[in-house]
Length: 188
Image (cartoon, rainbow, N blue to C red; front, side):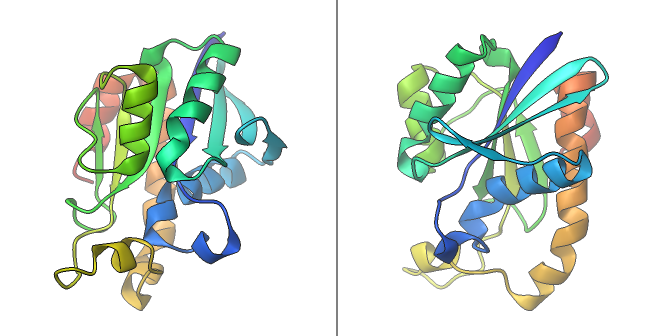
């Protein structure tokens, strides 16, 4: 049975639940809802497990705060004996239009503290990542407020469909592989 670790990045705490920076948590919540599974509190995060067509997906929402995400990701990769190529990190990206998906096999941290932590702890930038566009519609100097801000009304209206597509992309990653998923979902 092939195992995958799907790590959705976000910050714990009620004040962050509906913020742009927590899209990684939101995407995993949607997938868990689709698969009728629940998260339980475990070491370094909230974890849920689902089986899809002979594949096991370990869904991880680290409770370490964004800038220490690498600690949780490394722990669960090692605990579940999951190879690096079967890791998918779901995160927000300011450089991509709202709701647009970009999946890559590797890349820079792009200034994202969660990816920076994972790269430092794993000592590599070569792991699959799923960037969910949150756009860059903020005034100069207000990036932090924007990222930690809640979705506007237009985004809230479009978010359910975008989350459905994101959950399908994760299933595709486990079932069809990285290359097919990139071809099928990038830019959508």
